[in-house]
Each structure stands twice: as C-alpha cells, then as structure tokens.
Length: 313
Image (cartoon, rainbow, N blue to C red):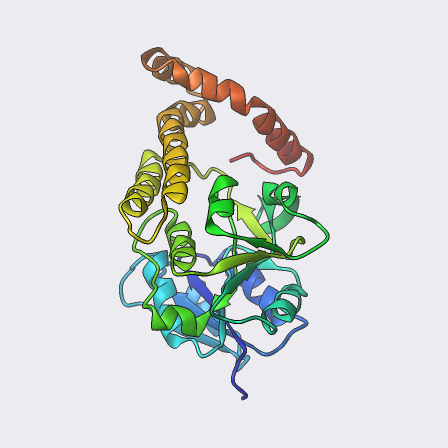
C-alpha cells in the first residue's frame, strides 16, 4: 500500500449507534489515498466490534485499555498516523463524498509551514441515528464565497472562533510537539490556537462537506464553560500571543462567563422546570437579557427540528 497522503483520526467512545455511518462516509470518498485511524476509547458498547467488521486495509483500529478522553485519544491517533496531512472525523459525524478531494486539491499546493485548511461545517439533526443536514454554520456569512479565504488568528478570534474541522500538516505539529489537551470540552479549540500561535494561518474553503450531529437531549454544563475559561486564561498568560489577540480573548472570556451564568437557567427550561428557571432568574436577572437575545435563534432551531421530525436538544 502506498504511503497515505492524509491520515483521518477518529476517536470513538460508545459510538455504536453512529460509527458505521461515519466509517462509510470515508469509504465513499472520491479521493482514495487515505488511512483511517480509529481509536476506541475503552467503549462499553459495540463500537469496537462494528469498527473491526470493516476489512479495508486502509482502516487501522486501536483500543485504549482505559478511557482517556477525546484529546489524548486524538494524540494516540496522531502517533499511529503515517500521512503527510492529518484530518479528523468524530465518530458521530459524516463527510460528504468529495470532502477529501476538495480539501486536498488545495493543500497539495501549499507550504506546510504556513497553513491549515478547513471547509465550513453543516449542522445536522439526529433522527433515530440518521444524520439530517440542517444548515451551514454561521461562518458561511463571514467569508468571501468566491475564493479560498485566508485568516490570521486575530481574524479567527474576532469572528468568535467558529467551529472548524481542519486538515493540518503532520510534520509541523510533530516537530513542535503540539498535542491535544486532556479536557472535557473545547480541547479542539485549544489545539487550533496552538497552530495559530506557532505561526500557521487558516485557509477556509467557502463550501461545506462536513456534517456534524446535534445530539438530542445533550446539555452544556458549567464544567464545559469552566474548561473553556481555563483555555482562555492559559492563553492570556502566553508569550506567544500579541496584545491585540489577548484583547479579543478577554472579550470571548466575558461572553463565556455570561453563558456559564445563563446555562443553569437554560437547562431548567429544557427540563420544563419553570419554577427552577424562575428561581435562577430571580437570583441573577441578567440571564433574562441573555435569554431574550437568544430567542430568534432558538425559535429558528426548534421550528427546523419540528419540521424534520426530531427532538430538540
């Protein structure tokens, strides 16, 4: 087998309901020079058995003895990878068939000391394990739709560090010992910041070939925002960032604190605990302002969920 140009990392934990679709979305890629590195993070369901049922030689499967989390599992996948470029696909998401071909048509002409590359993600509803595309991420409204966009770290931050799933150079991160942190939440954001801080710029293809799943009944917790604030605080102390970048991170941190305060109120509403929500609002009336600001997007999301026959998160 010739050396794969791209290695696809897929950490998986109890993803038996979804991983088959994720794997098959790689198998149908129009670009075929890849390897898929699946790291089963000590699942307690049939994730490993489903992954092992595929006999394609490009699929390599590893299993952690204990559960170590998504960040360290991605680091394990990087160690096993042989590709010049690295990509990742979460085990509950899918790629459209032309994703690798479109992205690699860009990266093959790049200096791997300068760039990492993403397309724009599409949010999708979960309907009994099926992934139903809903809408492209808001990043689509922030880029020039006629060209491949080049963003500095400052531009990425000023646009609210949108969710991305980039392809990045293997040798670059290996030489600089860049790794994913062991965090419950936003470990990927921390990794992208490391790429920027070490000198890379982000290329954005103004089209979408990655569909990520909005899982029903999932809830963001205060611990998630604590991890996010931990990331901000770490980088505010870093000598690798300039003052303009730190000002933007401070602004993002304030927004995260606002959301952290709002989350108990939102979760009680999701649980139909109106009295509990009122109690939270009485102790901190600012959550009502956050709630009112979010009404248009909440209404749009719930109407779309209803139209597609799915339960809102």
